[in-house]
Length: 278
Ligand SMILES: O=P(O)(O)O[C@H]1O[C@H](CO)[C@@H](O)[C@H]1O
Ligand SMILES: Nc1nc2[nH]cnc2c(=O)[nH]1
Image 1 (spheres, rainbow, N blue to C red):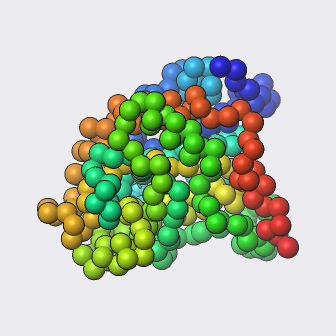
Image 2 (image 1 turned 45 degrees about the vertical axis):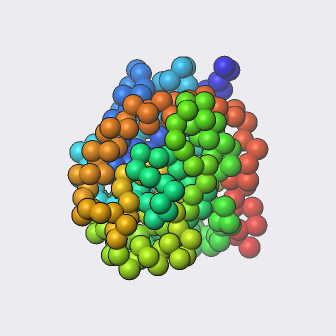
C-alpha cells in the first residue's frame, strides 16, 4: 500500500479524517496519537491525529469526548472548517440511527447515499456573502444531488462486504432537529417520504463538507427501531449501549475502508464550487 503524505511546513498533514458520533468517542483505532487545537473563524476545535498503517488520520468526536454537546448545539462549521485547515480531503463519519425500514434492523450497517433535511435551527453554510468571517465572502450554491462521495461509499461497502458484516449499500437518512426523539406520526410520515433511517447530525455536517469540496460519507449504525415501530420507549442510553457493543466492528470497518480509499480523487466532490458561485 503506497501512501501520499501531505507535508506542510515539515509537519505531516492528514488527508483523511474520522468523525465519531454517539458511542464513538476515542480514536483507539489510531497509534502515535497527538492532539491539536485548530483555530477557525467559527471557534477553535480539538482534533486527535494518529497513524494507521503509516497513514496520518485525524479524529474528531462530534459530541465531545464526554458526549457533552447535543446534536443541535454542535459547532459543525468549526469542525469542518478546522479539518479543512488541517489539509483533510476525505471524511468518514459514523451515525447512530433509528430505523424506519423494517429491513434495516438494530445492529445493521447502512452506507448512506441520500439525505432529507428536516432540521430547523442550524447554520447550514460557510457562504454568507459579505457577512462571512473569512475570505470566502462570496455567494455559492453547491450541487447536492448526491450528498455522499461515491468513492468513500465504495470504500465502506467493500469493507463491510470483506468483513462479512450485515450491511445495506444504500439508505436515505432523515435529519431531524432533535434533541428529542420522534413521534409515532413523524416516523409514519418519514416512511411515506422514503426515509430508511433517522438521526440528528448529518445536516449540516454533510453539506458543509461539500461546500469546502471535501469528500464525505457516513456509515449509519441502526441502534433502534423508530418511534411507533419500536416496542419499547426510545432511550439515548440504548443508543450508546448498542454503539459500544458494535465498537469493535465499527473500528474494523473504518480501518478496512481507509485501506480502500483511492489515493487520487476522481469524484465530483473536489469540484463542488465550479459553477456554484455564478
Ligand atoms: O448522529 P450521532 O452523532 O451518531 O448521534 C445520534 O445519537 C443521538 C441520539 O441518541 C443523536 O445525537 C443522534 O444524531
Ligand atoms: N432522530 C433519531 N436519532 C436517532 N439516533 C439513534 N436512534 C435515533 C432515533 O430513533 N431518532
